[in-house]
Image 1 (cartoon, rainbow, N blue to C red):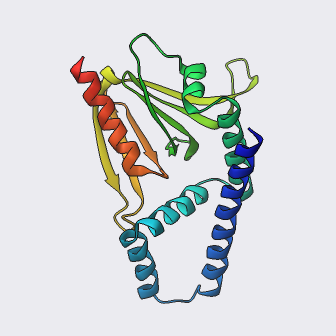
Image 2: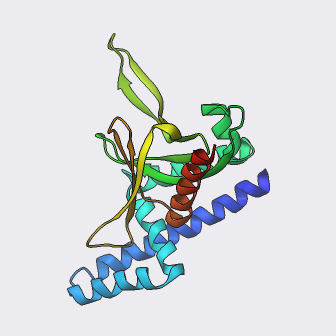
Image 3: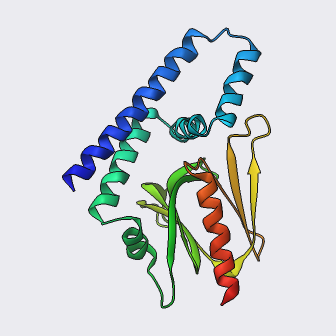
Length: 211
């Protein structure tokens, strides 16, 4: 476990340093023309490695504050290691029913009226679930302040469609829209591994339809 935490800290340190260097370069070239900006965006799209680096950058930037986002990632990584993996976290929070197979968990953001919320998107052959990395504060009907993780659970049978989308001006920024049979929409964004997450969502739908 200690070794895992050290590797996690090194990974996040590299992300922090990369992000800071990019921020510094942004300040130094704030007056650069639009062609340079477009060239940078093309590099993100054309290079697979650069694309992933861009997604890490965008993922971190979606957080409310850089320091809070990094702290949250460290806390999440430590929790994953302590619980013995993402599947165990999924079982603890949402349970695993008979015949249910856990497929994948992806870091992303859920779009809400409060803004994007960072968390884990869990995918199984019976449900799609989301749990925030940090607890969310809200007032109860009695006025009491309550802190609890933001959770969403969508049974596969209640899903009408799963749609891909992207930012027109920044094609590397991709989104997933999940629409339920009662026309509720859930938007997920900021994936570190967008293609894998989308493939697993499609796989979950296919497995459910085969039953």
